[in-house]
Length: 161
Image 1 (cartoon, rainbow, N blue to C red):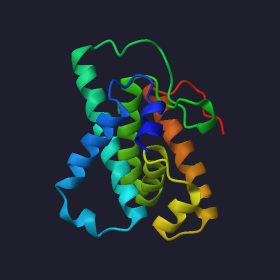
Image 2 (spheres, rainbow, N blue to C red):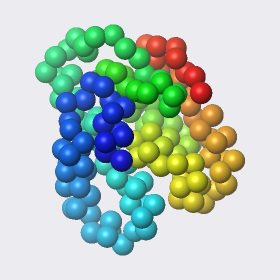
Image 3 (cartoon, rainbow, N blue to C red):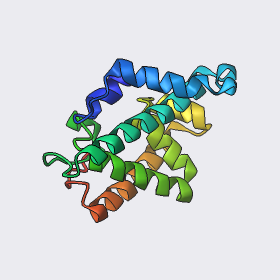
Image 4 (cartoon, helix red, strand yellow):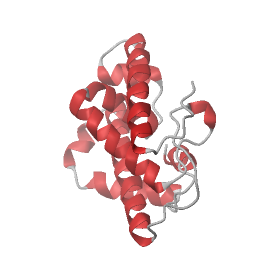
């Protein structure tokens, strides 16, 4: 999971090993994690990896305020790399937090898919909904997130698939 998340963040200076280590340190402090199912653990790990990546992006942003070279965020899995700049990751994190306030299930689904690499069938089982509902939620959440990212200027228009 960490290697896949790491590949999606071209600007990341965090290795997959460091990402797993940092996520584990976050999770190891929570005794209730040991009592979860494998799918629930993946969901928790996705949240921890999101937090680690966002924290690393905030540190890099603080160190260099220019945001680096141009790029775009796309929620299209076929694009190969979803995130290319720290500011885009931070904008996505903020938009995802807003989505959580409006529709927690959609936000959990996006986080599980985007940061945790869970498949549609796993997300459906985790959330207790049908695969059709997951796909419908993914389309709706992706459209909403793209709109939010365009408003902040963090999405380059490649919404695709």
